[in-house]
Image (cartoon, rainbow, N blue to C red):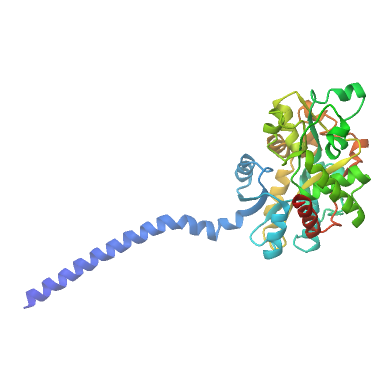
Length: 376
């Protein structure tokens, strides 16, 4: 009887020992798999920033350089348009993001809604190298909430052979070739155009053509703009901003309204085209870096801002995507073909005719106006 009890006892001891061994090794495996994540959560998370950016402004290579240099990890998330950013911030106040890229007029909106936090410029060593022409603008008069990094401007890219007659007539390419009936401009050249798919910018470019201004547009003037853009639809082949190669190189259209960013790509491919900013003036935009109000990692974000606007990095991203750098030292390294082109880098007289889009017409009014144009 005692032997049976002893055998049973030994069996359970052996069985439980095996169970404990299995559990022990299972826990070791779990710890091996999850300790790095726990470690990152407890320690390294303090060195991670979440950055919400345009999809074509900061290169992956740039991020890796920053991470290697500072030990700060950068999580990038992309968006395509300012309105997308504004809508999201109105809902969650930018919670979860530590740094964003944002265009001029959108800075004004986010700042007025108290969705951005103040920036300590004294911690940005490269701020002193920024072109003063892009500082102190209406959307952030003291640059308390934003740091400019890149800029671009609208103009017309056109096939020089198709408009060779302009040389004989001693006429410069201008906004009339975009907003007036081609048959009335050049009866012998019934051409089609690409127009930008950007409601706000389209309206203000039309305003420059009609009135030579973008500010204080009356309802009567907005109606004239609406009628002009409705009339223009007759010679517009397609509304788009980038990806113009097929339409221009395939001679589907003879000219296109586009940003300097995209015009550069066409000129790199073919010498048959030129890019011009009409003498009447144009619209330009400033892309900025800003810190959401709820971020608790401003010190880390300031390091990334300083890195992004440095001479080498600003140049690197400029060459990658085509935006003009705001850092004056970076500009010196841009290729001569672009740097000396007066429409990519206008001289002061022409620069004074460039306009930032104001916010005196609300987003809903712009959308309603654009809808009436597209649906008519």
